[in-house]
Amino acid sequence: MAYIVMGDHFIDSEEVLKKIKENTQFKMVKDLTKGSKREDTLIFQIIQDVKQLKLELDLEGQAIDVNEEELIEELMSLADETAYMVEDFIPEDAICYVYSYHYDEGSEEIKTIVVAADEVIGGLRLRDVAERILRSVD
Image (cartoon, rainbow, N blue to C red; front, side):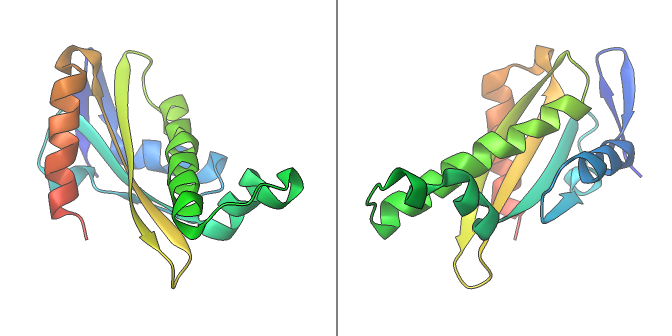
């Protein structure tokens, strides 16, 4: 269990994790908050199913011809968009940084990191925190 401070709120990362799992269709969600040793930041790793993302893209229905590189780029972008759902489960005065960083063709998964903190931390600082976390994540 990890408690973090966001503005006037104490947030239990496990409660947020539970809400995310109950209200989304992500393949897997991991709470990385405690491991970060930060007292002001929620951190989650989201694993999304590529097959599901492909259904959402509906490329066949649009009759668009894309190469493999463009498809992966589209899937990563959609994974980012989808991961922003996490904002629904954190305080309104928080900001999020979402970044899909790994496409695993073999297991057909995309890994995304979601970092959330109080808006006073600022977008640039939040991005810096996220980049440091990305260097330490599998």
